[in-house]
Every structure is written in C-alpha cells, then in structure tokens.
Amino acid sequence: MRLLVIEDEPKLADYLHKGLSENGYVVDVARDGIQGRMLACDGDYDWCCST
Image (cartoon, rainbow, N blue to C red):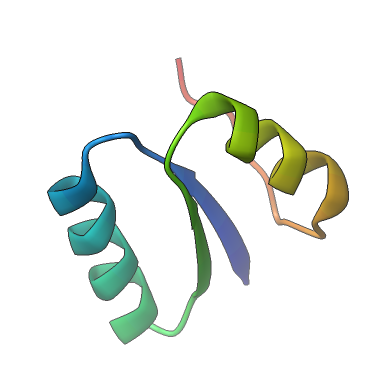
C-alpha cells in the first residue's frame, strides 16, 4: 500500500514515515499543502481522508 503523509512538523513527519515504512507501507512525505496537493494529484495512492 502506498501512502502520502502531509505534515509540516519535521519530527512528526519523520516518525510517521519510519513507523509506517517499518510496517510494510510505501510512504511519501510532503512538508506542506502545496507539495502535498501536487503529490496527491500526480501519485497513485491508496487514499483515505481524515478530518
């Protein structure tokens, strides 16, 4: 499963990336909304929205 994490807090983004990767996920991290939107539109992600 390929996931996109959009998080502007570097330590949290790194923690999520590491934990998810260690559990078998392919993870891309965007550090802001602009980069996140670009990756989301161009990538092939399994997706879920969280509010």
